[in-house]
Amino acid sequence: MTKTALVVDDEVDLCRLMQITLTKMGIKSDVAYTLSQARGYWQEREYDFCLTDLKLPDGSGLELVKEISGSTNTPIAVITAHGSMDLAIEALKLGAFDFVNKPLELPRLRQLVENALKVTHQGDDPEAAPECTPAQKLLDSRLIGDSAVMLPLKNTILKMARSQAPVFLSGASGTGKEVVARLIHDLSPRRDGSFVPVNCGAIPSELMESEFFGHKKGSFTGAVADKQGLFQQANGGTLFLDEVADLPLAMQVKLLRAIQEKTVRAIGDTKEIPVDIRILSATHKDLSQLVQAGTFRQDLYYRINVIELKLPTLNARRDDIPVLATHFLALIAEEWQLEAPPSLTAAACERLQHHDFAGNVRELRNLLERAVTLAETPNIDINHLGLPALTPADTEPHAVNTATQGAAPTAETPAARTHPATADTLLPNSPSEQMAPIDSSAAYDEKGQPIQAPTSASNLHPYRTHTQHYPSVIKGAAANHPETAQGDSAETIKTSKGLAATHQAAQAPNETTNINEAGLPAQGLEHYLQAQEKQLIITALKQTGWNKTQAAELLGTTFRSLRYRMKKLEIDEDQLE
Image (cartoon, rainbow, N blue to C red; front, side, top):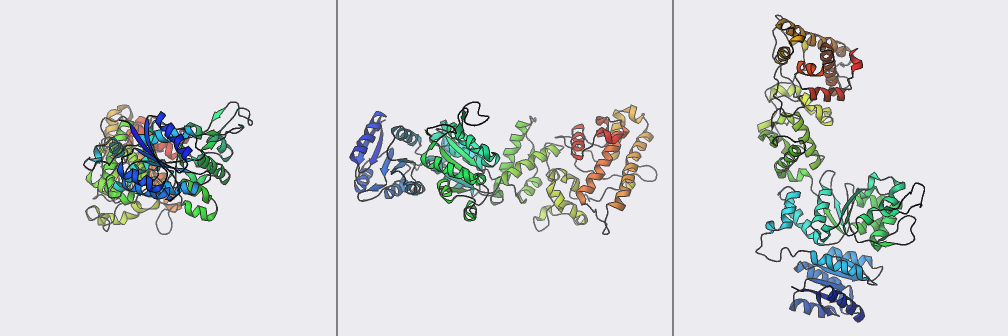
């Protein structure tokens, strides 16, 4: 079927030139010289594409843009006089697909028309189910969640993908700005081109111009060969400027010209090269405040902020947390080559939904990766998350036991939040267990019989069977290594007492030097617990002659866990001399 286009301009020669160009592309076109004539054509016929000038004898082309973009999905582009960038931006905000400058460049016009014809007419059929379209399927597979705030966000992304207007993505860190930027590119007519992301804050200021625009061989010391810049790499595609607020002022001026003129000049070159790119930008900072402070150019702000899309925080879409967690656990299982994806218990899932995610989706994934590492079974329970205990006001079914209230500061301390990887040492294994400081003197009674005590979930090996008590661990180690325990249960008790006695001896000076008058650790709970953990590991390593496998079994953990903790606590062989 032949494509049709409507061309609206009061310059006869220019209209003929555009009509000839469209005919060579296999597109049939009608020409209107006034706004009223264009409206008549539009009401009588159907077109696949519209191209209009902004200045017409009987009105403004902005009126036509508003009418067409507001009633149909037909792409409409505008023609602007050189230097009339403000009008072009206004047209883009009203829904224009793209713009082209006068004097008209035919290669640029052909590229614009090709991009416009790639745009799908999704939504033209009111009876069609939008979720059945390829675009909607791609959107749902990449942007997880169907909460109240996500549905309008997905619809907006689909609309933005149809346009060529610059988009500014704002939102807190970890909300998925690059994910949305890639979606906009993959759903747009530029999907066959390159998506080039760049972190503006990671490029040294002295290399920034070379990175963006490239350089010629010999243009400066060290330029041993021609280099293509990011703008040239993204030609025909999308350039994503992440953390655009970190651009220095000198670079903002050069970037503004490149965006406005759609041309770049490499360092050391004498001519400018035209580039056809779409600019997407993002930052977690407030650009409007930076403009007022004078650290970000106002004109550049208006160029990149034609359409602003604010991404919601994870706290605003808590209903999506279960499905997001399931998605991330499946990805983790695939990346870590686990036999099957782990799953969250109902308690763990509810705890996640009550957590305050300052790091948003990124924090959720990191938290799940840590939980999979700490989990002893394929089921991730609440104690594997390393999160502070909830208060009864947060959720009644998972309120902290009143017997645990005395140890509540251990789960609520800033140290537990700052160091989530060790927060498992602060959380009980079950709601009924009380977390009291480890008392080595209470590990065995006067007859040498072990007294059961809960252990921390310090196992770093996925799906390992949890060891409930120190004595059973030590007995298991003795059975597996008779040369260490000499097949004697008394020797096992002796080894266990050695660990407990050493821990008690190590604890004694801490109680005088590191405990303040209030009976609390002077340097904080985290530092105190790490010191105790370090001393226990050193004791086990000394007793096994630096055999990490045997030492791990004595401590009731795995070789992987022990190695991780030794690295974290900076334990080396020199300390065992």
